[in-house]
Image (cartoon, rainbow, N blue to C red; front, side, top):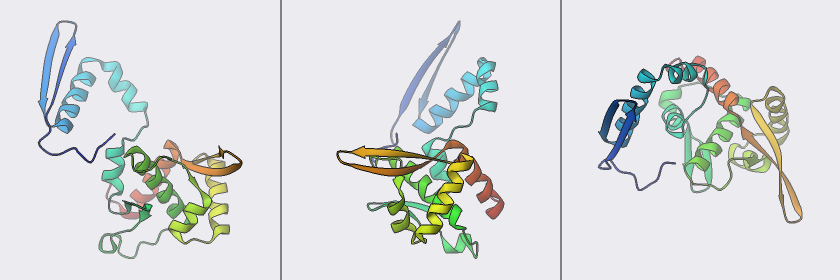
Length: 183
């Protein structure tokens, strides 16, 4: 989890011993992480093979990919595209719903919200989309596995909530890549 307290002067040190090989990486956390991953994938080929078929997104990857579109505010995730960068690219209702759900996931991973799932009324309030359109798009997205639907039970109330899946993030990345041809 990324903290607001992290700054550029933080230093990390990692020592690794693999059989007879001993290495130590020190420096900025991001550089140490990359060096550690490179070392492990070079010396343990199975890790590299596993990495080729694994699909997973870290919060830092998601922030890098979507920081020009998704903003995390005190009120929750917002879709605020930089109009210069987007320049006449129109998002479909399905893409807007997915961007909002991705924003919810990022906000949760950053510790800004307590839930990574969102009820339909939050999606509607944040996106200003027609509730019937949101309901239809969510139904389609659940059907293809890009979103999961579950029920949160609090005392006497039950709330249906939606959460983006890893496959849903992959789909959204593919759509955005075609739309912007930059990633």
